[in-house]
Image (cartoon, rainbow, N blue to C red):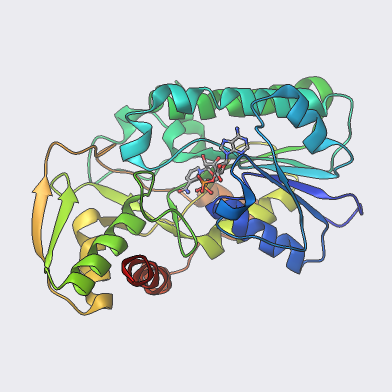
Length: 328
Ligand code: NAD
């Protein structure tokens, strides 16, 4: 946000992947930051002593009232979520995030903020537009007629509507970023919530460390995706939050690859050749997905452009270190 206020900026989900990086960036920009997450602080992915760190369950109305008290802006990133393996099997957990979105906005009623940023997702787009690996990139307007990912996608699309109607009724300056698959260091890399880039970096690192040169890939590996490096994600978030754009914007890379190509890149970074086993019964999500960046470029004069290989080099290096440390 423009520094029109010396009030703190609230970042929810600050103990998570994107939230941890965002708090770092805001502190670097000399903002005061209130960082909130449900996890005990010892389990936050990044702990920033310069922020006011607060543990709270934001599904509760009173916790939201406390969190927004006196803040000048809000980035709402809190969500109980994960990769395809998590969201396909935990639809209720994903949908109940609606309490966070509702109570935060309710708590903001009658308060003035410079901006309210909502972390939405590419999962809001209709499945029917994503049934081919050669998919056409998704444009923002195509979220309707709605047929999003059941559970997580529906909750996020409803979350967007909460924001849009808060603006309509109370004039709140809302900003909605639809993230497409964000990856990078200091994210979830094990435990069942990790996404494809982290999972593949971990499997390759485990193969390197164990000497068992094989890898399991979910599906036939021909499903396509684009993956955005965290630095682009944070830059896009900050640019959108500082803008006057009040409609949802894709924040995603348009460099589309198959999952097999993702494995090729990570293997070549690690310098190994792995025997591949495809698990056709594993969760795979949609068949193809890519981000159309026409609107973000028109609105912000910028779009995510860090090359996948460059981002994966940093991510693999970090995950390899975690794998080695966890074995030690
Ligand atoms: P993350 O899981 O690393 O971080 C989310 C954080 O929210 C976690 O630390 C979690 O403890 C916290 N949280 C969950 N329930 C909470 C509650 N009731 N009260 C307070 N905190 C709570 O996820 P992330 O990758 O950093 O994602 C951040 C946001 O971006 C989420 O809203 C997510 O849906 C969205 N998003 C992420 C991606 C991606 O690829 N990472 C893609 C699309 C959208």
